[in-house]
Length: 221
Image (cartoon, rainbow, N blue to C red; front, side, top):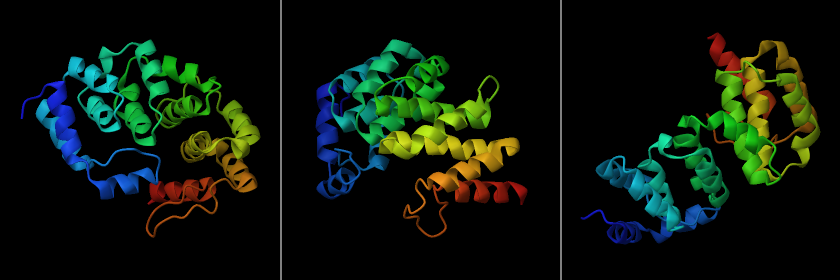
């Protein structure tokens, strides 16, 4: 198999499974490629920034996922990543772009601040996701009480993806910062966001009070 753009698109098309596509479409994703097979293609290609840009430019979801896997995070400017995030409307592309490129980019903090203030709730959700990382790993300079103020006033009525990211930040504040834990739990209990979210056995509930309690319990073991 050659690795030109047309050949790769043909390879991805051949890997498309209607059953996988049907499952993904229920979650807002429009591709049917088994992700293990997609990662195998990426492993063969290794890092290829120029090819990654070509794959991204096709607009095809499977091609964009492959592009993310063969990208070099430092090859993108802040404006590049901002444009890519705004184009990444499916949940899987959005999530992989953040996890595999933006979080590893030297522009992550600049983009976090930029996106937190964005009027587009999907873009703002990315800012909150990056904030969750800072809350847990590098909180110096963050105004955590102010974040809790915003969560308390805005999370209940936020669109789904933004609400999920704000809730994640709430949980991480409660988990990582004992001095704010009681307030974080109280906010979660009052707002009841994701309280009834269906959670499989042996998985942690995304409902912040339960999430916080479980992670604190594990840390104490």
